[in-house]
Amino acid sequence: MDKDHLVELISNSLLCKSNDSESTKTLSDFKNYLKRLNLDQLRTMSKEFIL
Image (cartoon, rainbow, N blue to C red; front, side, top):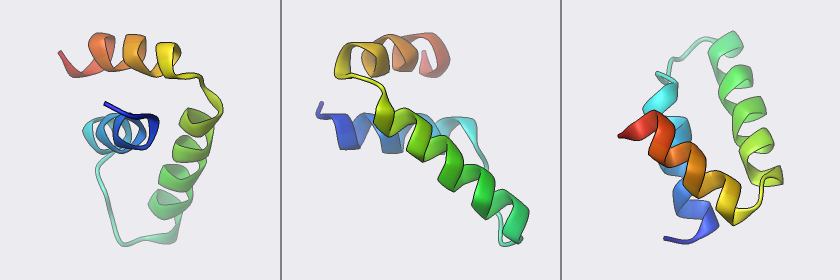
């Protein structure tokens, strides 16, 4: 899995999408954080939170 797919998978599994602006900002901030991680860190995170 590439980095973009892992970012989407993790963010979608941990955050529930909502229409309010606070949730949208939180999701955006979280995705930005995930994008700063390297691929190994994302893989580890996906194993811990998704499985």
